[in-house]
Image (cartoon, rainbow over all chains, first blue to last red; front, side, top):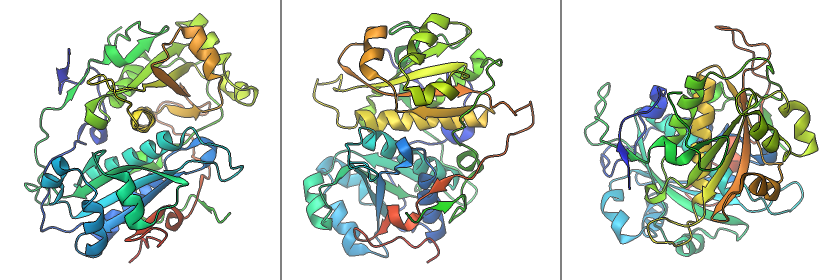
Length: 199
Length: 199
């Protein structure tokens, strides 16, 4: 595939550019409660269809709710356990599948939960924290472990913490991130016609 | 319902706080191409499962691709046509339902498209633009109008433009936005146990 590395094709805000998903965390450094609250609060202000706010964030903390953290950690695929073991916070992200207002299926349940998840991640990055979302987890096991009603779909586990290299006031360098060229995912006027960022 | 108005329960970044979804746009003021490119570029850097980047953004511009804009506008529900008629840009947001790498269903297709959509919205707000996402549109009609393959789910139409009151350097005041209390959507250690932002 014709991917490109870390070259924005148009100017973007720092708060977008600085977010990335590390595969390591500082295992000994807890996340301050007030920063956790800010991340959840940022998610709260995400937009959603009919303002349903279908997302639910179940927070587990290796230092403060160790049994819950372990239960959630145990649902991760083996490939993710290696690095996620160092994450001080794991958040289970879920979404309500029907509208509260009328009981009808909400086809934006996952879409809107994704919006809330990105708000969480960007707020975290703004506070010097890092996030890495994990799709590779056993949703059925997580549902059972936390007794989550079937009305909610379990979508992702968000790892949250500080990066090992990070010190107060010192940011770890972002690695090269890889994305498709903008022209492959943004179209102009008709399907498949590439959007040209420079004209 | 026990909603709360516009009172953040924990500090959040300006780039989160300033985004809201107006129901009016300055119909006579186009969106600069470079700003549009920045919004799409911000979406490009959203995270996604296996870095699939399943989202596709089809951009239509009332000034530059008027026929396409009209076709997309025509898919909107009557309730949204009133205010969206003033939006200079309408973007159809879709997502690929299967992974390109192995053809398996991507259950994060909508979730990841939501992340990209929020990145677009926050970048827009950072540039003084406003966005309002619309779920109320006829997806089948849009698919037919733009000949979009069934491999893609059509999720939302994003209206983009300037707010009527906005002048260079002057921001329109954000209205009171309503959200559920954080305690209803964020849990601590177990399902249903409210997260307390202050302790």
